[in-house]
Length: 206
Image 1 (cartoon, rainbow, N blue to C red):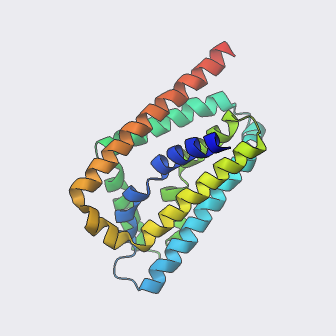
Image 2 (image 1 turned 135 degrees about the vertical axis):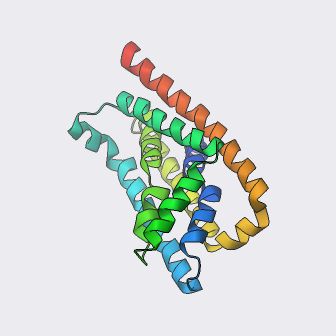
Image 3 (image 1 turned 30 degrees about the vertical axis):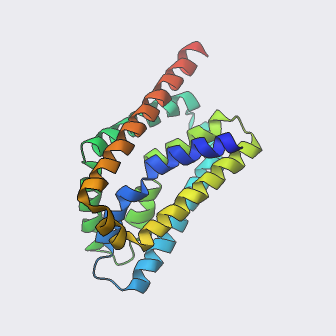
C-alpha cells in the first residue's frame, strides 16, 4: 500500500502539476470575489477528483467494453504524457492552458467544470496515469486504497494552491516557477518513456 501510495503520489503530482496550474487559476479568477474564487476551487477540484476516481475504479471495464487493451493504453498514454512533458520543458503547456482558460472565462462565469476540472485537473494524461497505476497492481484492494489516498492528497494540495494562487505565484516568482515546470517536465518525460516501454513489452512479449 505504501509503495502504491508513493508511486501514485509522484506520478499524479507531476501530471496534475499544482504549481503549473496556479497561474492559470489565478488568471481565470482574476477580478472576482474571494467567495467566488473559493467556490470555483472547491467545485473544480471535487469534480476533477470524481472523474479520476471513476476511471481508477471502473476504467478497465470501460476500456474492455470498447475493446481497448491496457498495453494499448500504456503506449497511447505514454505518448500523450511525453508530449505534455515536452510542452512543460519548453514552457508551452502553461501558455496554452492560460490562453484556453482565458477564452473560456470570457464566456462562462462558472469555470469549475470546464476548464478547471476538465482538462486542467482530470485531463487525458491524468486519466491515463491513474488507470495505468491501478492496472500495475492487478486489482490489489490495498494498493487501490493507496492510489486513491495519493489522489486525495494531490487534490488537497491543489486545492490549497488554488486558495493561495495569487500569493504563491508572487512568492515563487517567474524564475522559480519556470525552473519547477521544467524539472517536472523532465520527470514526466521519463515516466512517459517507461509507460511506452512497458506497453510494447506487454504487447510483443506477453
